[in-house]
View (cartoon, rainbow, N blue to C red):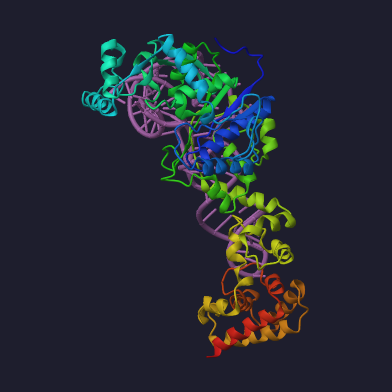
Length: 491
RNA sequence: GCCCCCAUCGUCUAGAGGCCUAGGACGCCACCCUUUCAAGGUGGAGAUCACCGGUUCGAAUCCGGUUGGGGGCACCA
């Protein structure tokens, strides 16, 4: 039985708190969010925390916080980490829904669609090894399906605790995938799989089906890695008499070698990107285009723009490589689109507390066109909070010399610059005017003339615009650093 | 091993039979601008649309096969 087309759309995301929010989970969540928003449906967050040992609270917090950071919100589910569940189908954490799973498992057992399996891990493994040796598919051999009551009693006497296995009907399963179209699998090729462990803990394939029904999910949009699990779910849905939702399997995000994106080969935690100073706007825009495009040549899209344009049927079938260069580019675009006030606010976590808000606001214009990540500001602005001694220690005197100039020549130029600056009005414009005039009367190209100044003041060859930097640093420190450089040049 | 999915520049993609001498973007190269670095501007290299057969007057677009890649086959999710 399928769900009537006029049924209001309900979608969900179902992260498992086994680690920080993963790029792939974020993208799947985003697509579900965009789909729900686009069609005016309801978006549910369900935490799949069955069989997750300890420490799930920290991961749940990371997942929820970062989802919020991206701007993804949901209508039902835990609204905040450790927070209360909102919605008519609470609780939304699977660890709190065990009664329902137990009840549905009993139904399956009673109807003969599931049976107790007393095989031990070792026995199962031995069978798998045997099958592997014979080049057979690694699937359950059905031993416990044929047990007599006496066999069962003997196992129980041994202290074995049975798992519950679903008896997979050997039939062809077809479904119309939202993204891939008609897909067919032969469940006769499948082995009976465990739905409840010996210790009573229900397993993923089972609980996902129970909860999607309970939460009236109409459209299951998930990663392509679940495509071949879908026939299992459909078999379960039928055995339980549930309504069958529509399924849509979105392409995987890939490592540069085109394997499924993994922690081993790529940076997969959203929080890591956040910490490096990627903007959520850039992240969302980038993620959305990994497997979808509006069909035009536009490429800068806000979350709202995306929701307005996103069609689930336009999602691609092929996997997409995560291209960090492109993310960097987009991040730069979004940083440059920020006004100075906003930029200063976002820069705050990346700069020393010693820098006042007022200084930060004056710094923002100097940085806003030269940041790929917000964290780049740390190095660019370091000269402001480093001591004069630290700055001096950053460079060898040779670094002060423009190409082809001697120490004596450079010292003379620097001294001329010093004299011009000390008399100038202490702001960017005044300093620049004085600096340029001095360069000209000294007969040096501006670039060469400014080099020793830049190195003296910032300790580096690369810095924000020189005169604005001096203005921010202040006259006293700027002059002290120039004098230090002059001293090193003559010794 | 079995099953399933996929296939346009290095990468993300436009393209739903003639508009394609295959467009855009990132990256790369060159030049311009320029106080460094960026940003910006201009131009360039870069794809026999994986391959082979069909269908058609005509195919990147439809069909079949091949190859290649990926995913799945747990008392993980």
